[in-house]
Length: 488
Image (cartoon, rainbow, N blue to C red; front, top):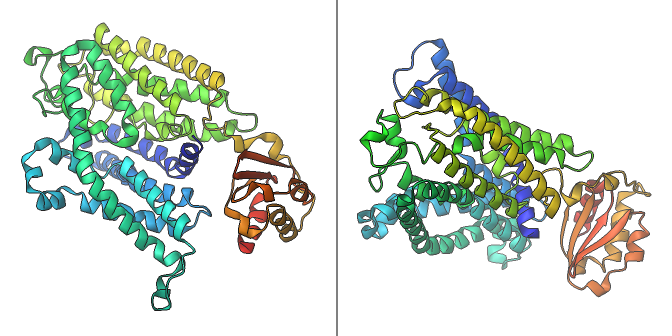
C-alpha cells in the first residue's frame, strides 16, 4: 500500500497538466463540431476550435509519456532527472519492440489473429507508461552508484542507468509479448459473454471499463461494445444515424450510463474530497480535483480525476467503478440514450441529442442530480470511514508538522547530527523527503539513536517500519535533505 501511495504521488505532477487540456478540447469541440463529427473545417470560429482541440490533444493523446517521466522522476530516491531519462528509454524500447509491425514480423501468426493484432495496436497506453516509469526509477535507485571496470568507467554511476533500463525493458517486452495478447483476448471473451445479459451486462461492462483504466486493458472491452469487433458496434451505429430498429440491442445502452457519472458524479465526488481534506489543505485539493471535475463535465476527460486518487486509495477507486456499473443499469432501464464519439461530457451530449437513436436526453438533469448526490455521499462516507488518503489527506501534509520550527538554522550541522543518530551514512540505504519530513530506509534499526536525532532540534521521530524512519523537520526540510544528500 505504501508503494502504491508513493506511485500515486509521483503521478500528481503529470496529472496536473491534464485538466486544462481537457477543457481546451471541450471548448474546441463546441466551436468546431467537425473535429468530432467529421466534415469541412472553414471559417475563423471553426479553425479556432480546431486549434484548441489540437492544443489540448497534444498532452491528452500523449498522457502515457507524461506518466513515464512523472513516475520515473517521482519514484526515484532523490527525484533525479536521470531516472526520467531511463524511464523514457524503457518506454521507447517496450513500445517499439511490441508495436504491431515488429511483433507481426517476428511472429507472423499474430497478424492472422484480429484480437492479438488489436492488443498490440493498443500497447502505447498509460499502464505501459507507468511500467516504464517504475523500471526507470527502480534501475536508478539500484544502479546509480555502480562502479564498473576502468575500461568501462565512462558508463559508471548514473550513466549506466539508462543502459540497464533498456536491458530490463527487453526482458519485460519478451514477457509481455506472450502475456499481453492472452489477457487482452480473455477480456474480449468476457465482453462477448456479457453481451446477452441486457442492462446487467451493460452495468458489468461499465464497471470493468472504469476498473481497467489504470492498465489500459479497457480497450479490449471497448472494442467489443463500441465497435464492430463481434458485430455489435454501439458507438459506430449510433453515430451512423441508425436506431434500435436497425440493430439487435437497445442502441446507445453501452454509452449512456457514462454521462451522468462523468458530468455530475465526478463533481460530486470531487466536492466530497475537498470537504474531507485536512485543515489547511482544502486549497490543494480544490486545485487538483475541481479543475478535473470541470474537465470531466465539459468533455468527459476523466483521467485527471481518476489518476489523482486511484493509487492513493485503491479501495475508493473500486467503489468508483462500481457506481458506474450501478448507474449504467439504471440508465439503461429508464430509457435515457445518448452517445459519444470522444467521451461522455456535455459537448458530446449536446451533439448526440439530435441523432435518431437519442432518447429522453432531458433525463440527464434528474439522473445527473442523483449521480451527484450518490457519488458525493458514497465518497464522503468511504473517505471518512476508512481514512482514505485522497488529495489533501496525505499523512505528509499534517498542519501541525507544517508549523514545526527547526531550532537550529545551521542545516549542515542539523544534517550531520541526524546522520550520526541514524548510525552513520553506511546505515542509510535511501533518503527522500516530503513537505515536512525526511524519509529514510536503514539497514540496522538497532543503530538508530532517537535521542541523538532529537538533539538536532527536530520536531519528532517516527518509525513506520522496522527499516524505515522519518524525521519531522518542518517546512525547511528540503534544506536539511540537500545537506544530507551531500554527506551520503
